Amino acid sequence: MSDATPETAEGPGRGFVAFRYTDFRNYFLARSISRFAFEMQATAIGWQVYNLTGSAFDLGLVGLVQILPFMVLFPLAGLAADRFPRARVIACCIGGQVICTGALTYLTFTDQITFPIIILILTGAGLLRAFQLPSEQAIIPLLIPGRAFSNAVAWTTSGNHGARIAGPAVGGLLLIVGEHVVYATVVGMLVAGFIMALLIKANTQVVSRERITFSSVFAGLRFIYNRKLILGIISLDLFAVLLASATALLPIFAKDILQVGSVGLGILRSSVTVGSFTGSVLFTQFPIRRRSGHQLLVATAVYGIATVAFALSTEFWLSCAALAILGFGDSVSIFIRNNVISLITPDEMRGRVNAVNSVFIGASNQVGEFQSGIVATLIGVVPAVVLGGIGTICVVALFARIFPAMRQLDSLDPDDLVRRYQ
Figure (cartoon, rainbow, N blue to C red):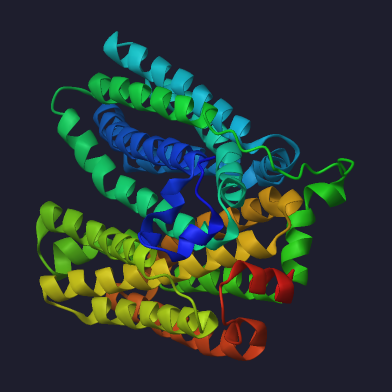
């Protein structure tokens, strides 16, 4: 670690205090580079699969095989993050993805690629990412002192959103040359991420010594259930995304309602990420310090209101603004949720708790898109999205009542959170 001290978190340049610590810098680069590479690869995979098969179902299958390993293996992935050095787990997972993408590059360049081979490779990569994510989330408190933790969370989230914005754009440009060029570039980026992960030297992890039993594997679920603050925060996000998920319906809005075509669809999709990115960058300089529970509930209600506004809008610019506000509201939820979960959870449990949290998030996104399609089929696209937004607002009111610990959450100061809730 660098010679920075915890006190520097309150001095000049406090908005960048997390980067004063060498381990965090290496972690940030490893995670951001691998996310950037993933987004580039996802863009090329979608293009290649559609050219190979011309099937929308096959495109859906590509997404399924990447998320399914995590849905199945999350208890083991969380346990691995608590029983093995997290930096090494991250490095091994990125290294395995180098091999997967290397195979994709070679088979594409030699024209031997087929759809079943792509599915097989993506399944392997999905398995590796399933073990990577809990370790990535659980390691942050080990890299920096508590006073810089909120800043680290904000910058980590900003890096993720930045990758989601720039990765598809760079991948799309490289597709002009060919899919193999995208994959070769991804290999190079993953090698760089692998090296940065190896440079993380944090050795303060509290390794779980529990005997491996059914109870220890699923201890994360039990811990969350017994901590009503964490349960409330995770559940609020779950229901908000489940009810107000309009992402799957954006092509319909772009084509039939707003009539802006494929270019407009791309702008609509990016508007959400731009709003989230703006919020996460703002929190690096002006973190939420007080009335955190109140701000979480308000931000989630704004998420629902913005969803309704988007559904009712017939103006393209207004629709983009509503989606950006929606994304900003989500960034508030992410910032508060990550702070609370990481700081309240004892280190020997962080892997398993973060694995459960990630499954909740992944399930809400996937199932939310599915349910929005079903409801839209039954009652129409606009009524479905309006209903989802109103439902989110109602959930906020309900959760404010049944989870008083969430409503009363004030300071995100690490010492306060540990003293009151751990």
